[in-house]
Image (cartoon, rainbow, N blue to C red; front, side):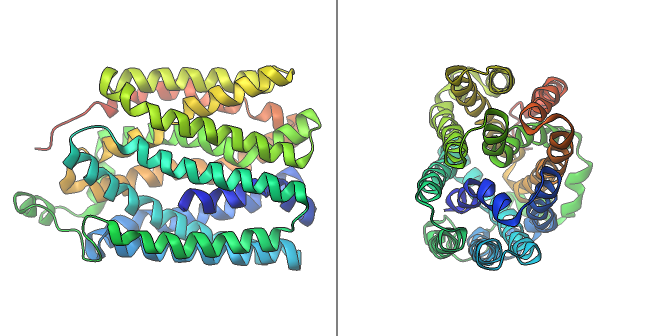
Length: 377
């Protein structure tokens, strides 16, 4: 439901840009509001998870995200108001940030208890939600249904059903309790100490690069296809849906690759595949090559974020604090990405601005060794 709510908004970005009459730079600033809300929520979410448990934090995050989508849809569609739309997106960002950290902490504990790689499949569930949201977005855009009804109804569904799902969490509605042998270590550490750990920060850099790889496509791929290749708005939504479908496939199959080859080879290969996909999307010019590029981009971007979350959670005693740090660093890509792409798009065109992803992936490959599995001490 988190992915469905997010994709509902992302699939209507071209329509919102048209309805609000926004240029590339203005659209980048509007998208920035979501990231600001997320970044305000992320640093403190680890503390709230330790205090109230993952279930309660996810429920609150789902409610905020759903409410934000309703407000944003009403502002962009019925009112045509940029401030109201921005207010809704800010609430959406707050919900997304808190929901993201808390569900990843829960997923990491499930993965640890199972003793095998499953985190990418939880993220595949997110991607399945984005596929559904993207396809519905393409269909309703093609049918001419307004942003208000589409985004508003989808926001209610994401908020209500997302909050209801926490009944199945490991710790129910009670605060997640550490194991007895971890009590002393947790009690002697302040959550902010995770910000001083070199390995945690390096994982954050890795997730930053992969979040940018994913986030640029989420926010700008549809717009780039429309502007760069003269495609209709519904085809831009379809391009986004194709990307998230490829991400879903990569996350479902990625667990097998991770268990067979380990984190590091899989991450390096993913980066190379994503970079090649971006190049094909921008320079392919022919429809077949562009579609292949979108597929490669989605496959390459699929594993970076979930593997980073798993790496940050290797020690369950400090998983909440470290996931919060890594997620905060990663989400700076969503903070800086929209205005950066908007600036570059204003000068070079949105399509060619996508090349920044390939440039960022090259040096970030140096951070991959930080994701090597470690045993809790």
